[in-house]
Length: 257
Ligand SMILES: NC(=O)c1ccc[n+]([C@@H]2O[C@H](COP(=O)([O-])OP(=O)(O)OC[C@H]3O[C@@H](n4cnc5c(N)ncnc54)[C@H](O)[C@@H]3O)[C@@H](O)[C@H]2O)c1
Image (tube, rainbow, N blue to C red; front, side, top):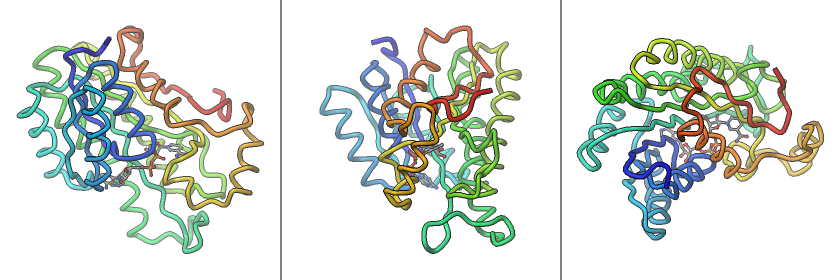
């Protein structure tokens, strides 16, 4: 119970990696605010947490709205009285009509703006709201979700330019926040997944293309949401107390830098 009495907010917590993070943090003793645009899934995950004896609050939140994020943090403060951990896990990767990646010159203004707002601007909005609460306690842990694409660029498969650019932005935001907040005992890190099974993001790809992609990974398989949750848990647990400004690769060796 290393996170006993702590309170976490997980965005996009209703499915995929976010769901696994909620279950992991709750199992470690944290109360979890589960924010998702899909309230049914957030409630489902909250049900799993409470059935296992944990504390959870499901919230319908569209992370594109700064007002909804402000309200999300207030709800968590009203319910649990503090915020120790933020995992801004939410992320989207728009696809073409047949689920394929989009070439940069075919991307619309709307697709570009949408991806930036969900993946990068949401991180800014969430951090802006939780940081004052963390500063008042001189303690906090923030994990932002990046991607191997944020380091290497899009490969022309399902990954596309605004996705990679937004994830590179997340990496840079992590560095800046880590420097700004170190004196406040607030650690800011990022996790960089490669390809993760059982997520909405992989659902549109065919089994054959998923298998081809898996064979290019040194560990020859996709990651599991629970494996990403372990990496995130490490970054919010006392085991990482001397780590800030780190971009933790969790990708089976897909990216080595
Ligand atoms: N799955 C992968 O292979 C992969 C690879 C690299 C990075 N990532 C990153 O990991 C994170 C989680 O990915 P995942 O694959 O588990 O995602 P997913 O698509 O399986 O789930 C995302 C969750 O976010 C929610 N969501 C989407 N838009 C939202 C919005 N505007 N407001 C609130 N909630 C919203 C969805 O309802 C869903 O519950 C993302 O940041 C993603 O970019 C995933």
